Image (cartoon, rainbow, N blue to C red; front, side, top):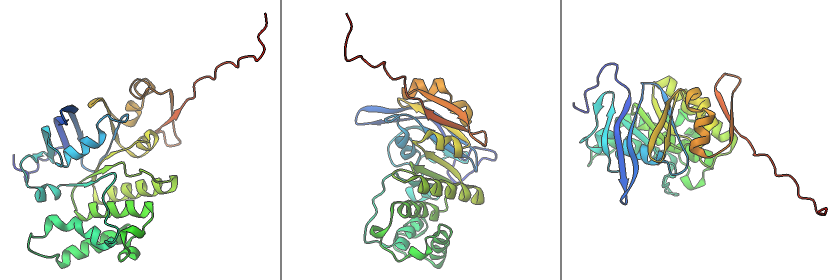
Length: 278
């Protein structure tokens, strides 16, 4: 099937038997998942489970086994420029040239649409300015990246991905190193853009409560395999989390019915008397 042929009713993004081996070690094995058009799918799991590797494999940045499909079309064999028109990827810790301006960095998202020997068109500039405006970054367009706060840098990385105008958006830990206010700001922004543009969002999230609050569906990775998938209420179950995270947790519904995950401190040991009797 051609990468330009969409199958009606197909998932927006899908993996079948996805596997990745890095440095002789199998990091992912037989991972199958799918996200419907306009859906937010969150990938969760303990450290080292392969979450970031999964996104990089879907983005075509590392060798893999198995299939990746977008709108039912296999992306295998597509040139990177064509793949970048289908899937946009925002890494967890991107290299941001400190002297590059916000506008020029965001404009890099138009690279898949610019010929190798050409320059950006009026359309490329229009798309870039529009995205910066929607992310409240228009006033920062001329500012060097090295002069931005953490929250501003996260928005700029998101801007570059959105400028690609790809139907599938991959976000690797978009709230890393952000305080509570900026975490909420970024996630609310992603959700608004998803709904407005019918984007399909696949993101890794370290915070299980945030995953439960924002995602439509979750995939739980453990030791490179998908061990659970489904709505947040099914995946964020206490037995599953205890087994795969090795933590004592309590899961309860929030005000909107979505699950909230709380750590439960184990009972404190009984104090030892300073004076032993007998």
